[in-house]
Length: 250
Image (cartoon, rainbow, N blue to C red; front, side, top):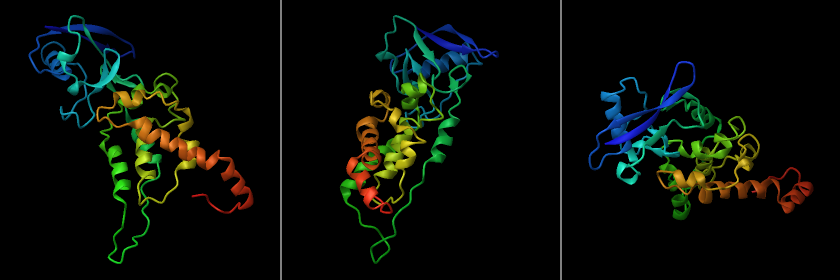
């Protein structure tokens, strides 16, 4: 038997933890146990899930205080002698029980300039790219939009800077575009101002919780910060703009 201590919300916007005991068997994950509780003890328990294979990002929650996917967290890897505490993600508005409203993330994504390729340079209408440049952005395309990185980020979780900061998931998205060998659009001004990349103090907490093992901080956020610094704070670039005010730095 295992005890699940699950956050249950009420109609007034509050709530409390309730304990449920359920039998377990070898190979079970947290989501299996939650489904057993939902089926036999709490039919009104709200939990979001879809693929149960760690690829849809739907079942994000906080397990013993850590943002994780319930379908990828094996019970055998948790201390079962004490209750397993399940809470909704803290960075987004609560809908019910373990379900939060993550629609803000999709609105943020719309604000990022889309992919804008350069014209094909080959006679056959295709592009030529260095394989290393192609490989560099493939890591970012593994994102399943579970938003665990958004949940753990202190700028959103603790300081609630949703209006000023797009969060690590969308810095990954911006990096995938900015570093694409064919993309020609410029997102640095937006990253600096509207997207608030300066708020990130590279604690790497987002990298630690990513279920797809994307190196968010080192491979996406830091390179974007470097590009913003080169563009807006480098003294040589500033001098160049004074001498050639109409010229755009590369």
